[in-house]
Amino acid sequence: MDYLIEARDLKVKRGGKTVLDLDNLGVQKGQVLAVIGPNGAGKSTLLLALSRLIKPSGGQIFFAGKPIEDESALTYRRRIALVLQEALLLDTTVFNNAAAGLKFRRIPRQEIRQRVGEWLFRLGVEHLKDRKASSLSGGEAQRVSLARALTLEPDLLLLDEPFSALDAPTRSRLLYDFHNLLVETGITTVFVTHDLDEALLLGDQVGVLLGGNLRQLGPPQKVFSAPKDRDVAAFVGVETVLAGTVVDAREGQLVVDVDGLKLEAVGDLTAGQAVMLCLRPEDITLWPDGYESSKTGFPLSSARNRIHGRIERIAPQGPLVRVQVDCGFHLAALVTRTSLQDLDLSVGKSVSATFKASAVHLIPR
Amino acid sequence: MGFIWEGLQQAVYLLLSGNEEVWGITILSLRISGLATLISLVIGLPGGTYLALRRFRGRSFSLSLINTGMALPPVVVGLFVSIFLWRSGPLGGWRLMYTPTAIVIAQTIIAAPIVAGLTAAALQQLDPRLQLQLLGLGASRWQMIAALWQEARLPLLAGLMAGFGSVISEVGASMMVGGNIRHQTRVLTTATVLETSRGDFGMAIALGVILLLLAYLVNMGLTWIQQRGAKD
Image (cartoon, rainbow over all chains, first blue to last red):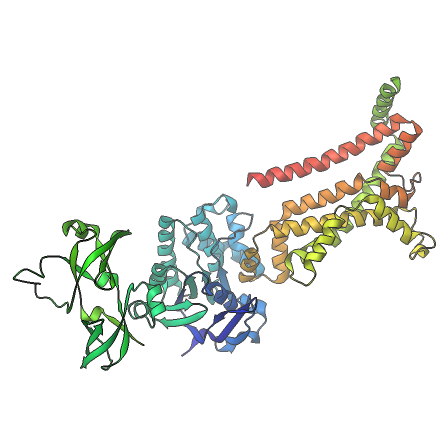
């Protein structure tokens, strides 16, 4: 595959400790790679290495197929633009800030004026251009910081959690605008964040960085719905992870035994295979008690799995409510507040939980 | 007590009449201390920048030396410069003892650590990630340093003024290596010492007033810088 930037066997040591150790990471031209991982996973280190601001202790980085050492660090750094979590604006006007990178490149004054004006406009901060940077709000400052990088029209844009220092409404507006800009311009981007929503929105590809290793790289829906291992699953929010064994496999339809409980799933596995069974809380449907004992039983549905349990915890999660059910293991379900009220769910109540065989994600062990 | 009143009257007269002696001494002082400050800037700005930005072995030791240097007693500097410039000393052949150049050398040794130390402090107060940000926007190493200086311009200016303030008011080293020779190495401080010891209070007060005025101007500048920094 043709990558604009590619890192092979990249290793970075800091203070004698390996903080980054990647097999392979590549971004195709025009694509946005969102690298997600918790704090301390090596995300910033990865960006600094890709910007040639820290020296890797091993491996190689290729830009447009050539080793980046083929050209001077300065020439390379003038192909890219880096945006950090803090806006880090200079103590001067907004215009001068946005023009900084162009001035470093000795672009003619006339062109600077035109390009800076255009990008301040596109980021919605043109009216602030004569203001002192120190008088801006956090959101405005970050918009100027993004404008300062985008005026450079870089081959590669590197972003280190640029939205995480902002308050929620400011962040979501900027995220929306920035997403549109990325789509319009098609700038190849590596974007680092610990926020899954940002990764889902912006990333064409998502990489999961845990403990300095790239554990999984693929399209977002793949990473989020089919995490490769238990740690990735835990990080991307597949909350229920159970150990089990495939006891029956027929044409892709599987029966998995989890502590005596038989659950149906789909997948290309054979009987006897040990697996991790992952369930996303939003795929679980809760039923109030009563169906189990009533004559009619559960209405017919395509949900193949049914488990009985008792509610042990209820916690709000944004507009939703996270209900944890004790079914011999802890099963997490996400329901709306309305559901919670209509079904009169409370801690201690017996409920049934159903989910489709296709909602079960299996990771072979 | 009448001599105080007489002294004040005479001082006002000397200042207002443009007395050649007084203004000659003042201009010589400004030239010597100004030049020493300028040389301190040329040494201290790059030196302090290097100490602030580079990680090298012995860095904290160098910083502690600079910080000690910021509090060098002028008489000790006078002593060392005298030893070196003494006729039979290592640099005696240059015949610089009791010349304005000797005072410039001594004052540079006093002011350079101050400028270097305050430069290092000013740059270390900047967010360290600003360096990465500037390089990540395509700045060369020199462009980055220029941007950092620009960013720290107010504390840097304060450092420069502190350097000037320390040498314009310094007396020990100027006396020792300059010798207080009339029309040659007599500066505001050494002249004040001399006139006071001679009992010529009018001249001493006039010179003292000029020194005070200079000290006031420096501090007014510093205060202005601080206020501007606080406003942002």
